Image 1 (cartoon, rainbow, N blue to C red):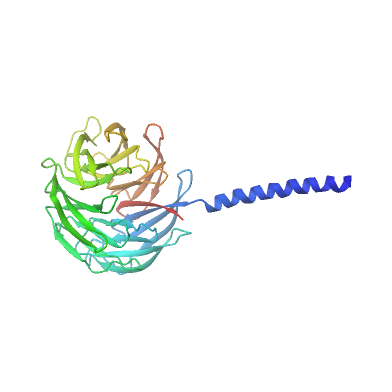
Image 2: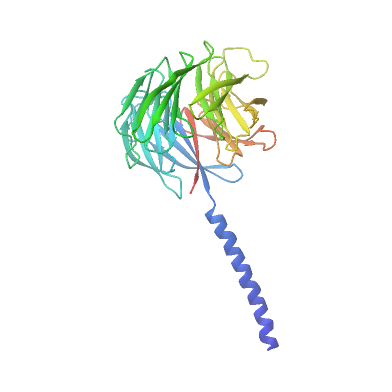
Length: 371
């Protein structure tokens, strides 16, 4: 009996160890994988990268556009809320929305089909239900609404609405009840009430939010708490903070701060703006100086405090923050590459990690964690 007991003890220990290892392995296997998608205008494709926990990127695919011959001036991207479909806007004739299925295990893209866009669209975005696609035309001075078919391909435009000069972004509010369009050349943001059931847009009352003359409102982002909006202005380099009244879709400016680095001397050319998923830090890109500026966000007041600027890719038209809020990836239209930064979780400061080759003229980054 003693011999039997002595033999069973190691077996029990081994079994416990194996069970523990299996559980750990299972946890790791079930962890979300993070992917970065880069829209490349001149090569008419999307660079797909897999991101490790360390922020290291591994290229996994170059997805080309089927049925597209000529490059456009930029390649905006949008991912549907269910994470099943990625859509790329093509800004050369025939003005297409190219839809790809996203493989839930590998993150790779498979072409589904192409749908029509109303014009050359600088910006595309899905509504919160994933049933409609919003788009904004800089040169056409218009915004549009397309239904998204069950397979994720855009149908014919349902509404095409003239705007002021140079519509640049057209995005829904967090609750999907309003949609806002920046008019860079008319220094205003148009507001629309959105009926997500019928798929219709109606001008709000008042229909526009005015900003300073020749400021050039370009891109904007909502705070995750839904109480604030941050708007970057291309022509003067300002970042404006607004309080947001969700019930009526009203913006009220509370602060104006610069995205230009200290000692700036030249013509501002600000581009993109994003906020971390926890809402603690905000970032803006500026193309004249090729910099990224970081801000701390006060969650109570919505006000910003400048952390500082870092050099980045040449002509940083687009960048984004990964879903964990630990990394930022910026692309350069004139450098054909992407640089990844670690976000300091205390200060919000950016620390450069590594750069990676992309396609030609990269201008847009989307992150996605799967499953």
